[in-house]
Length: 381
Ligand SMILES: Cc1cc2nc3c(=O)[nH]c(=O)nc-3n(C[C@H](O)[C@H](O)[C@H](O)COP(=O)(O)OP(=O)(O)OC[C@H]3O[C@@H](n4cnc5c(N)ncnc54)[C@H](O)[C@@H]3O)c2cc1C
Image (cartoon, rainbow, N blue to C red; front, side, top):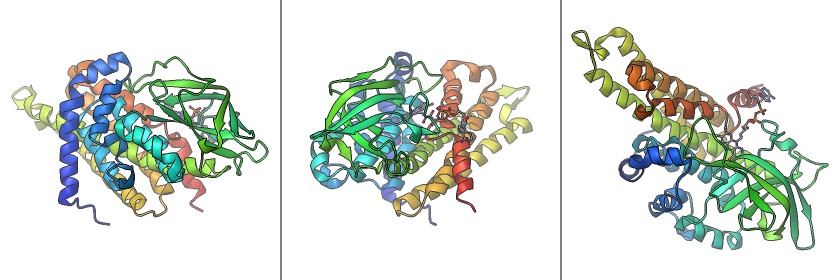
């Protein structure tokens, strides 16, 4: 498999990286303090097509392949240390927008995509419930059929982007008997519907600028056109979205790892101890070498998985492997950077404590790493 980037892909990465550096990096601290990004900031993301990068050309998007979308997220995180903003973008693209693009029909897509390309359409994924996390398909939220559509009823927790989202991709039981086996369906629900309320934004350990909350669906009436894909196809839709999310978010983490490595090397070349730079001490040099090895490994995993995804080849095991390797390496790289920076790396202003906290979440969301190991094991023999 050839991972050589062509001139167009190199340009794409350079332009997104410098866009992220100029437009988003300077306000990282204020977004983290606010616990969110603003609509104006999201619109800037849309003006550069980032938040609609996988939208087909016929709907006004740039129609990035999965590989190019991964390159875009990697470049974004290389240019901007705001892990929360990158995470919100990655979650919207993979767990929100992608299933809509794949399974909604042209009629359903028309109005929605106009909003998404203009930055007025943030899509949040609502699967997890208070008593159904890893075991998400044991959900209790129901979608009861009526003459004109469905009534949704239940609660969804830990919903990324909920406080600012315009649409929710809600997974609900259309057949409680069948459950996992054809009883779960996906619905695209606009935030304005009667009976939908958004919980108070949660205080998270990291990813501070990515707002997250529960949503409550109290007898919410939606028309039949809210159904995405066929009735009963929710599990398949979600699994496909998770393949994308595991790979695209890993690409985002890869960009963060590259940025942290570069910053650490530069620091080790200038900070002195005794009559040497700290990088000349073997203990420090080895630590940095380890960071570099982990980053290179992460890059190979991400690029391979993203290529397979672009080629529509089976990718689930690779996506799980990539998610485990990259999320665990990301935390170790951030922690090693902290040790190289010493006290300076323990200060919030260095961005390193935030990176460690962001990396810890990566082992939990998109299915915990334990669950990824289970998925891999179940497909091995
Ligand atoms: C920052 C963040 C953003 C999120 N965004 C979203 C979102 O946008 N939409 C959404 O729907 N959800 C979202 N989630 C929820 C996320 O998908 C769940 O947290 C995750 O799937 C794990 O579920 P849980 O937290 O209920 O843990 P649990 O399922 O309760 O698991 C607890 C522990 O038990 C282990 N465990 C559970 N079952 C097994 C098993 N069978 N074998 C071995 N070990 C097991 C787990 O690995 C974990 O260590 C988000 C979570 C976070 C942290």
